[in-house]
Length: 444
Image (cartoon, rainbow, N blue to C red; front, side, top):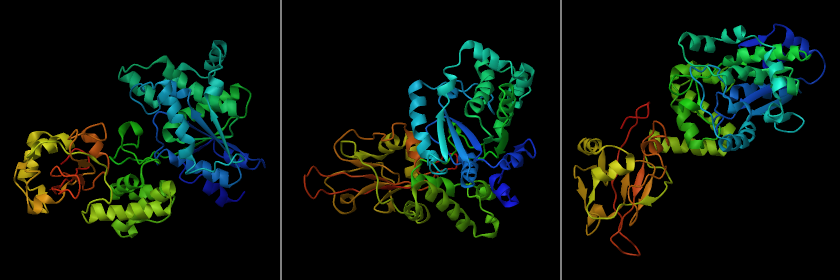
């Protein structure tokens, strides 16, 4: 083994413990078993959770075997690491559905060929532990040691409840290492205690203790730790347009961290044109998940919709509300989840345009009009309405959040299509409402 090989395996590592042990293991002349466990607390793996996967991929490239443990059983308890309260418990159906998607997502980063990756569900062994074995397991770590953990210590000091099941979580994760006979376990820095607990438990079961290798936690779009529960993440299964748009929203201050941790690039984005630096990161994120063609299309979409303020090529359809005239404040209220006063203010401030020109009218005739009202009714968002139906329906099922979650920080395009009661060659009405969104997703 040469120094460059070790540097590649431990790139961006915060902890490699105990010191010198990884080098000794690498000198054994056999493939190491490199473990990473992922609980299925949400349907998505985000780019932050992919950072330990990138280290697994590095070990695979060096000839070692990745052991990906899907925590279907430990998810039923919930990892307390970094938590100030107990995690919500998912249903069995949610856990099973999430577990099924994880391998497909991990395949974007790691080699999934059978000789390089072993995929296990920890329910295979944890579900078979009887009470006597659980008692034996709990004897390997002291309660005092558990309560010294930073997250538990803070909750004790704040008198925040800690369930016994949460105290059992480190034992269960550690037993995973026993079951697969791990040489190395990967995890974020918030996992350090659990990884070191794995060493203690492995030793108690007569196995050579694993090496603990931790990687940094990625900061999310809102400046907090990237987390599915905070909805501040870039998911590996997000659409190309979503991934591109979210990445372009990352602050300039965070770009060096994303270059280092996500792209694993030695380039300094501060030396590049700021826009081009962010575009390069967005291209990387989309290409890894969806391929180069999708990345080019997503960039073209971003340029057209965000930078040039044009409408997307395609938008879904829904129904234009019946009745004539169309009362714009009510229409905007129903479609965008705004209050009537917010809709009226939007109109008064010139945010509503008819054929490209601002209109202050609150009511527009949908039929019997000539000229510009007989074209296309278009509101900047991402929905389309067609005549004669339910009207104002939220296509995304969650009100305002559906719209504002589509293209973060972009101008939005919504097309309403109406006719004059004809069947062929119907007249169309155009209306344009300009929206711009604040970074917290609440602004209009």
